[in-house]
Amino acid sequence: MTDERTEEERQLEALRARAAGELAAVVTAAGLDEWRTRYLGRERGELSAILKGLGKLPGEQRKLVGQAANTVKVELERLLEERRGEVVARERAEALERETLDVTLPGRPIPRGHMHPLSRTTRQLAEIFERMGFQTFQGPEVETDYYNFQALNIPADHPARDMQDTFWVLPGQILLRTQTSPNQIRIMERMRPPVRAIVPGAVYRSEATDASHEAVFHQVEGLLVDEVCTMADLRGIVERFAREMFGANRKVRFRPSYFPFTEPSAEFDMDCINCDGSGCRICKYSGWLEMGGSGMVHPKVLRGVGYDPSVYRGFAFGLGIERIAMLRYGVEDIRLFAENDLRFLSQFR
Ligand code: FA5
Image 1 (cartoon, rainbow, N blue to C red):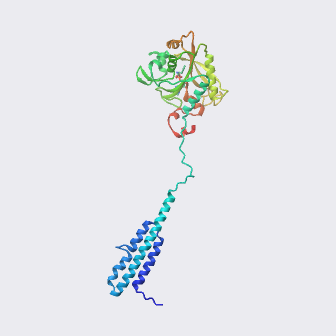
Image 2: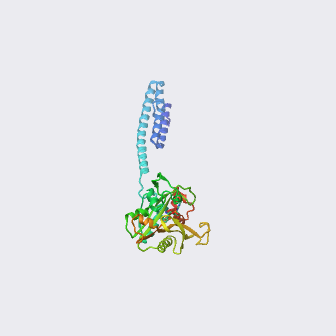
C-alpha cells in the first residue's frame, strides 16, 4: 500500500503522535503549561511553525495541509483539556492526602514543670513541723530596723550587727531582712501563748558567695512559747525534725553559742549523713553538720512584746534551708539553686 500523504501531512501526524505521547506523561499543572507552549504556543509552538510555513505551499496543497494542521490542533487542544482534568483531580487528591488528620497519632507532649528543690524542701520541712503542732506563717522580706534588730535586743551600736552584713533600703531604718527572726516579734505581737509557729522565707546578707554561702538564701524560723518550756523541749523538737527529715538514727548535738535574742543560746549540729559521724569530706572530717542557731527566748524580748517572763518562756531556732536541701539531695555547691540551669533543676522531678 502506497502512502499517498504529502511530506507535510506525514510531519503533522508524527508531531501529533509525539505531542500526545508526551502529554500522557505530564503529571503537573506546570508541566501542562510547558507542554502547551512547546506545541501550541503562538510564538514558538511547533504546530504554529507549520501553520506559518503554509504560505510557501502551492494553493491546493496549502488548503489540504491547512485543514490537516487544524484538525491536529483541535485534537491536541482536546487532549490537553482532558489531561488537565486528570492532573487537577490528581493534585487535589494528593493535597487531601497530605492534609489528612490522623487522629490516632499520639499528641505532642507538653513539658511538665515541677517544684524547685528549695520549695520542695521547705514544704517537707513545714509538714514535719506541722505534724508537731506548729503553724506556718509568712513575714515581709523588706523589714524595719526595729523588727530585724532592735526588738531582738540588738540596739543600733550593738556589735552583733556585724554578724549579719546588711542590705539597706533606707540606711538605719529599712532593710532586706538578714534573718527570719523578726517574725518572732511579729507573731508574738499578734498572738497570746501558747505559740507554736514556723516562718520559712528568703533572707539577704551582703556576703561574698562561695560553695556554702549565698547572699540570698532561705531560713525557717521556729518559735514555741508556753508556760512550761525548757531547752529539753527544744532539743526534742530539733532531734525529731532531724530524724524525720534524714532518718531515724540521726543524732543531734548542741554547742553553746551567742545570739542577743536568746539566753542561753546554742547552735545545733546533726551527725554526718554521709559517714554517720566517722568523718568525711562532706563534714570536713568533724563527723558533724551545722544545722542552725537556737536558744531560749530572751526575757527582754518577751517583755518587749508584752509577755510576762515570769509566766511564759519559749524557745526559738533558725535553720538554713539551702543547707538542708544540699544534704538531702547531695548538692555540693549552694549557688546551683539560684542559677536556673535546667540541667541541674530537672534532676528534681
Ligand atoms: C541566725 O540567722 C539566727 N537568726 C538563728 C537563730 C534563730 C538563733 C532563732 C536563735 C534563735 P545564723 O546567722 O547562724 O543565725 O544563720 C542560721 C543558719 O542560716 C545557719 O546555720 C546556716 O544554715 C544558714 N546560713 C547563714 N548564712 C548563710 C549563707 N550566707 N548562705 C546560706 N546559708 C546561710
